[in-house]
View 1 (tube, one colour):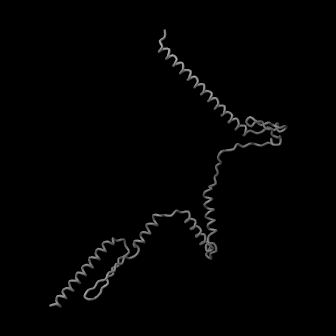
View 2 (cartoon, helix red, strand yellow; view 1 turned 60 degrees about the vertical axis):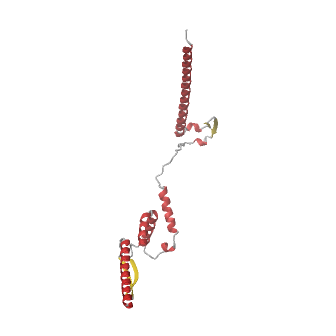
View 3 (cartoon, one colour; view 1 turned 120 degrees about the vertical axis):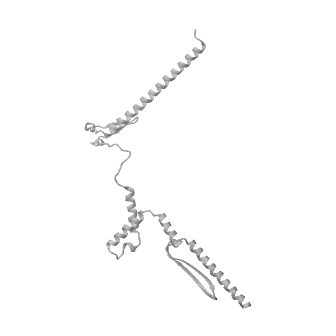
Length: 217
């Protein structure tokens, strides 16, 4: 006699087997449906690429579109081939380059009359057109322009000039120091200049004090 536990386990195994059989049957039907769809697609593609026989031109033919049937006249059944449509057509023409060149030529045509109707020779005109095209296609070098701009602003291409005034022995002197246009550290020149001015001013003050002392005596 079987125990309740054994009967329960037997019921569970039976349920599992039934579920597995159902899943297998469902998968079999799914695969069969997919195979049928693929066969239909292949047959449609082969029918599109085949020649139409001449015997079918004598009478109207019936063409099946889905579940409907359409009658085609005999005149349309001439010797012709139906070429299957492709999803993508590759072309050797470079559309982007052609568009850029057309844009450049349109800009040159719309440029002022000085460029178009110049009195210069033809070779010079061609060289200017080439320069315009290369300059418009070529990218700007932002870093180089920024560096050159900073150099001009700092003054490396121009000489540095320091000017100061001081009085010595009841005469006014103007001291002008001019440095060559090289990349030196201007702080060193500034320190030397201030030190020189301080020395001259101290010397001038001491001399004036001595003169005042001698006058009082």
